[in-house]
Length: 119
Image (cartoon, rainbow, N blue to C red):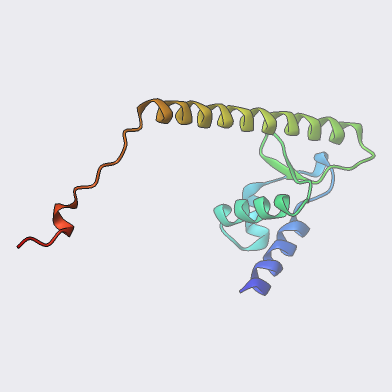
């Protein structure tokens, strides 16, 4: 199973071009790899977790930035800023829920009657 996943990760990586001018949309990457769009997104997530700098453009295209292209560097910076903003928003949501739970969580009291033998 792991070999099969690794094979798909390698295939997805080969389907994502270097350079923003050659960016490919999700549908095309999925079709080239012969997997669903949802599975393609999961593989891209795994590749990113493994350190692969896959950038997605606002137009929906995926690419690996060319370190010698100022446009790619700017696009990577834009993407990083957007992702950081989304992470901060999610963290604020988590903090709000944590705060609410701290104020409103009631101690759980178990009714032990069902566990005590009578008689």
